[in-house]
Amino acid sequence: MQDRVTALETQLSERELAVQERRIALTEAEKAVTRGAEALYALRSEIKQLEGQVEFARRERESLEAGNEGRRGEIAQLAQQREAAQAEQA
Image (tube, rainbow, N blue to C red; front, side, top):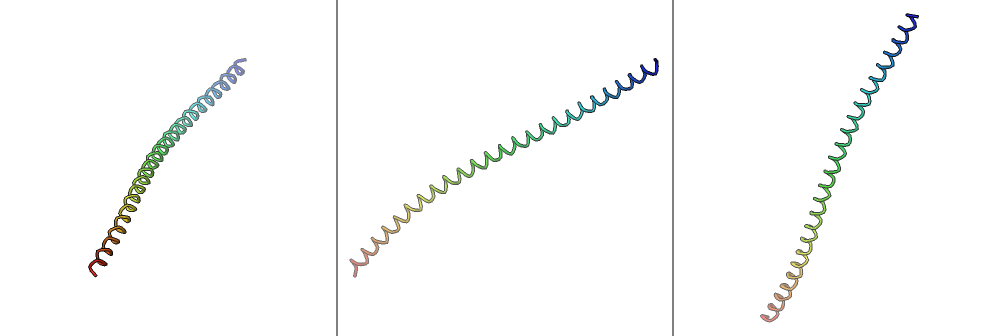
């Protein structure tokens, strides 16, 4: 009878140890998931920031292109005025 009790206590201890090991593994897995979630959040934040920079650069480029188009028109107009002035002098 004493041997049976000792065997059952040993089995109980082994099962408790196995449960504790699984709890530790679960805790480690949860920590890994948390680190992964934090890394994902950081990447998403960086992507949002970069998208904002790209959008700003796109608007800036469009603004510069519009300004350049206006300057091209002014240059063409000045060239016509110069040609007219040269024709009058000739």
